[in-house]
Length: 290
Image 1: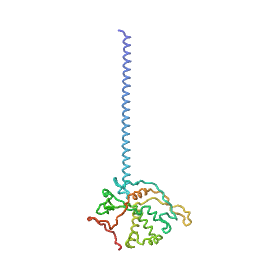
Image 2: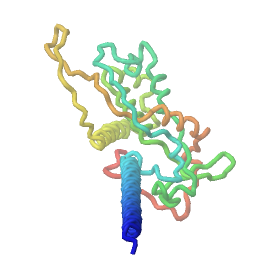
Image 3: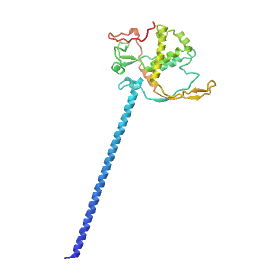
């Protein structure tokens, strides 16, 4: 037997086996590495998906809470989807309030010297009512038995008569201004019984109503903005409150412009209104001063 040949063949087979084993090992290592890479990719995609879901959920939650917060403002209870008021900009912006001013403002000017009434009229205190369409009455808690409908000159009835709360509140503030002791003489000489009141007792009840209406609104808002005190250069005072503070405000111009553009051209006189046969009447509270 040729021993050298057998040795050569044995070495050849041994080398071949080792090569095969190495190849198989490399293949298994590659497979394992590929598997680990696939697992890492799988976990990465899974984590990414979970992150996107969490982010989306957070965004949806924030939007829902903001919507609920928007809906929960006492003055915005009727601003729902589909409401005609949705067109009004109700976003917030920061505004600096002015300081105490000995000279007052155009809204507090002496009516015997200048024309503060023009400034108040520009705010919309004398705007006519706007109309809430029939189909939106339920959004505002209105129904034709309790609430008065607006009647056009041609006899058509498009919907309910309404004004904004802010219009009423500004009207009330203007009433109080006119009845301040230093303004009362001027306005009583122009119109002894304003707004067609039947008596001074009714006029007094109207003024008292305005005081209470503004009190209720201020308490409803319960503003917790702070008013600090500063050292005063005024020789009559050592300290004074600093009213120059930032406040978060709605856009009054947007509200006023909306009401101006949509006010009816002519309001029917009360004596021309036709009371429905099924009308439900609202009782006045307190003793009628007649």
